[in-house]
Image (cartoon, rainbow over all chains, first blue to last red; front, side, top):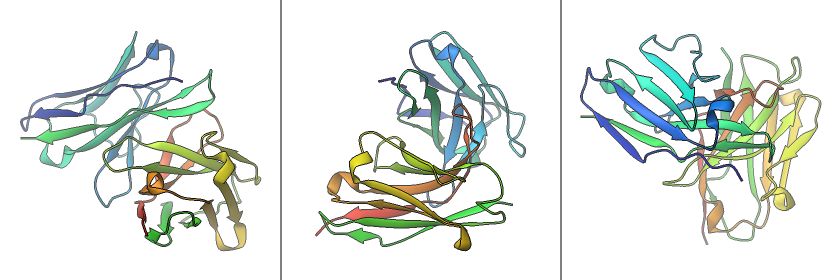
Amino acid sequence: SYVLTQPPSVSVAPGQTARITCGGNNIGDKSVHWYQLKPGQAPVLVMYDNVDRPSGIPERVSGSNSGSTATLIISRVEVGDEAEYHCQVWDTESDQRVFGGGTKLSVL
Amino acid sequence: QLQLQESGPGLVKPSQTLSLTCTVSGGSISVSSYFWTWIRQPAGKGLEWIGRIHTSGSTNYNASLASRLTISMDKSKNQFSLQLSSVTAADTAVYFCARQRPVVTRPFDYWGQGTLVTVSS
């Protein structure tokens, strides 16, 4: 089965840039989506199709996807960005929706 | 604005059946073509897709859960439901309901806030 690998945690200072990676075999050939999870709140789609932002998501959130790594980039990080971020793809071979293990973003 | 809300018991005994309902507001689950989906997250782990029901009533399940799983829909109440039988401690998780457009590559664009279900005697 297809596996997505994320670092368990990323820490950045306010105002800096956070890069959260999602690794997978030839993930660059797939559409990657990213979700923000905060305790007690509904998860929020923050990036879809690698680089597209849903309405309401600020321009300082961007994405990239090439080769074996997709990346969610959050510029000018704010305390409110502290959350878990999960990547997700659809694996054609297994016809499964696959999620990464999630990355906890801490804003120091 | 579409909203989804999960409801159901927070504690289920081992070997019993876990039953959850997702109530959709701000839109009808029967008007447009969507997949209405269940996803779960065990503590400290990643998200796991459980299964889905299409507006038409057709279902697709995670193969690892299919033998224990039923997802159904009540259009008159604008709800869809999950039943997972013969539960064990491994089924303890936060359960989310979500919506997906009817193309497999589409993301889950609306989610409920999740409900914690603990399997314990």
